[in-house]
Amino acid sequence: MPSITRLTRIKWTKSKIILGFIAVSFISLVMLLFMVDVTSKIAVSNEGRKKSALSIFTDRNYSVLRSISGQISSYQKNSSHLKRTIPLPTCIHPVIISNASAARLRPDVSFVTLDEVCWQTFGDNMSTVGKMSRLSNKLLGEMNVTAVSEERNQTADEVFHDLGLMIDVEGYIYLPGGHWKPIDCDPKWKVAFVVPFRDRIDHLAIFLRHMIPILQLQKLEFSIFIVEQNNNMSFNRAMLLNVGFLEALKLTRYDCYVFHDVDHLALNANNYYGCDSMPRHFISGDDYWDYRILYDSLFGGVTGLTTSQMRHVNGFSNMYWGWGAEDDDIYKRVLAKGYFRSRPEGPVGYYDTIHHDHTITSASPELLCLLEHSFERTEDDGLNSITYQEPDIELTPLFTKISVDIRKQAWKEKWTKCDPLPFANQNHENDGNHGSEQNGNEMV
Ligand code: UDP
Ligand code: MN
Image (tube, rainbow, N blue to C red; front, side, top):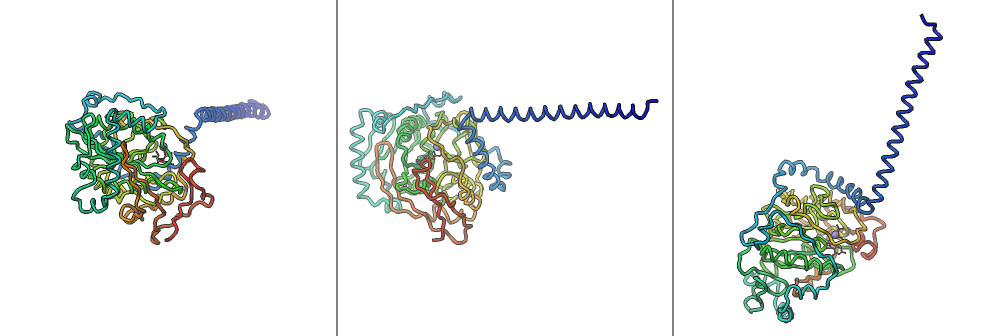
């Protein structure tokens, strides 16, 4: 029988071993955690701007998802709608059909001037196109564009057509203002590209050099509308897109609208720029995010809605002054009206972006608050409520430029008010071109 002291010693020795084991495990755990932390910090700093933007964006992601969680569950049930290839119409350039498995384009992002893109597009027809532009602008000044659209007798492009203000350019009838109709095919969609714009002329030239040949291969009837915010206030992408939609309808009869950021370059000509039975998000990944979709409900950058889908959702909200959330807002409208989003799958929907300073990567709390309460405004903040001064419209060889001085819109008392940030009262030059002037959704 061991004596009590011996027993105690044995127990004590055992406890020491156990304690030692616990201590060693604890120290190893702490060291392991420390190493993981250091490694991830090194990784983050190595990855630099991109990854830190990713984490900030993920925060935004959560708040967006939380705010639309109600619909998310219902749309996930219908996920078969999400990954769709729009069937290509028969009249499309054979190159596209034979490249159905998605040969990847390599966009040229080197500097180019608009003049150079004109020469590239029109070649020897350049001087005729220049004359056509001058004459058509004069005619447009004399036409009452609004009256043309209301009577629906003849649109501006039909007037130009009847007057013979058109030429053939490589299988297309070209009309002033950058309106293209394929000669040997009745395209499924007449597509208005609406591009929100301010101070990005270098991007615009690169965008046009890249996009026009793709659209011609797709044999779309198309026209490009550049909607320029002609003031120094915070940028309001969504309101510009509403203006583009309404103004384009005054000039011609389009049935499909593609809202396209100027810095997005499609990497695959098979990403067909027609509309679909459901509002379309054309991006399945871009280079900035390693060709992934940052959050599944993303509906920004490049989207397409038919004229009737646009009317049905009452267009975009006019209230988003500054960066972000306006795209999530229209997505909420799309879901609220019973649509599901359509999107290409895989490399067909990849884009490269023309790099620019992303000084802001998260929408302000004010804009997220607007997004949270967006349902309150759907019916009376959008296409049916927008007011703006008559824009300057110029038909240039490559596009129709709509230059507009948009202003804050009347705020309705029944809407939940979102307070602007106290510090945000500067003009757009101070923060990556977007501006952070206060939203000013004050009662009017
Ligand atoms: N945009 C512009 N000028 C500006 C801000 C935005 O022309 O000062 C247009 C442009 O078409 C751009 C789009 O709005 O591609 C979206 O803005 P941005 O590219 O800055 O957004 P981000 O890439 O940071 O999401
Ligand atoms: Mn961008």
